[in-house]
Image (tube, rainbow, N blue to C red):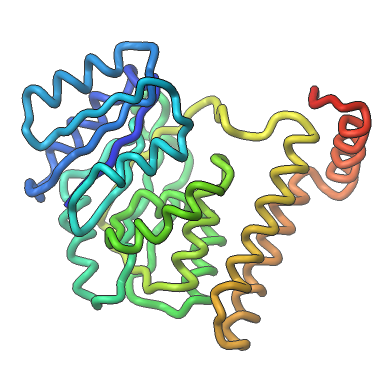
Length: 288
């Protein structure tokens, strides 16, 4: 199996991530690292691991190709039947890969085996934020898996273990989705089209960061993101061609979720943001 680790300026955390991946109980793996033209010591750290461990393959981009394309690059460079994306600032329990690989015994059509998320602080200490993103234990219907996905906002399922052929199918969507929120759009497509399973014992420790550089900042950026995200999520339901009762059930979960996301500032706050965005558009500006 293959693990793809895209990284940019990750010197503070990447060594801990690599150590936990190489310490997996399932030793038959390759770790593909793609450095996105980092300006810190990240390349030197990763090159050192590649010299010391034959399971590590390191590649460095001459220029920054953007986060989505770098995620695609580690998949393109990998070779395993099963594939897992890894964030450079997370840490995995030693049996994470072994437990998720076992999930594929549920059937040849299973596309993703996901684990459970436990949060930690930026310093690596246990967080007071409750654990989240527990996966489905068994193959469930599309509406039920969608409910679990949206109810938990389970974006960390993206860091579960994919069947490689399905990950490759998702490449087209990964090229086009926004960086912020795109993982949920991809997961929705997956949950509507393929069986998803998981194991609550497979733990990924996700680091809570104090900043999200890809989050929209100005009113105009927020409104543009809202339009792209909502349209993309609804389009996935339409293109899945589910039986009418299942499609209706999925929309019953999706519409309240979108309402919560789109109106997170409340009706008045959202309306004011839209007015500000319209003013910025009329002035040809994109400042706050």
